[in-house]
Length: 374
Ligand SMILES: [Zn+2]
Image (tube, rainbow, N blue to C red; front, side):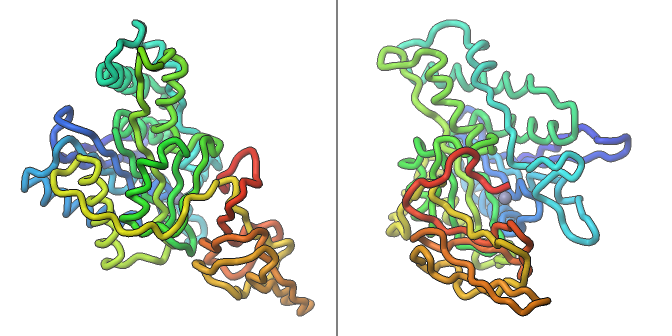
């Protein structure tokens, strides 16, 4: 295991953060996988899974089983990890700018296309290799004028040339679920089965360029820009997934060890780790559109007393929670907006007006525009 320290641009003199990446195997000898944990900083289940992965990958490397290269960023957001406001962790948004740490990753398609220059050849493998060189150069040329930009640039640089990108997060109180781009879903399906995912949310473009889409969707964008086709093939060559490792309090060695094993089994399936691919367990869900993932909104503030739990199947109109005004005693019922799986809810038990307090995965694409929560 090689450990690399990446100094981030300090926001102010003396405020120096660094990112650490762990490198297993040998670059260029096979496929590359890039994994990162807790881009939203205080999503601790991801940090624990990364800890288990670090140990397991070191063992696999010692046994000579890493075929290509695996990069693991065990804590992807040192800036967010340091942020606290009145004792509460603040890992989702950079407090200076208010920007979500998992948005606004650079679209490298235009820059990479310009760097490729010569037309694509008739050999897919040659074209993929040329695109990877161009993507690395484009990521290296990104500006880093703030600490946040410097973090985004460093993370993208570590993952942009990978065949597989696994971005490990968690939700508030939730079942294990995945977000991925619709075109890569067939390649992600084994991962969903190995992890026992209970929901998979698909979008071609979810809005504001989260990390996984910056890595995977640059390939179809480049294919279009470079005029790829049967004579000049450029297959999509990055499978990128946002893995939501249940809820923020699901920090448990047994769960983390199981999740780490599932991720390793997926890397075996993809040929990054040598071994016999495991038999795939049955799928626990069908993929549904991210545009069909409907929020349960609190119309006003109040005590949130849940009637239903993540994992419950709901019909539109089913009561999900009571919202109680502690001043008047008035009770109103929050109902499921659609038929679907209730898969995530708030940890806090007091809602404010307009707050999204739960998510129901429905089969119909009902929303448009930016599809991810803030
Ligand atoms: Zn997250």
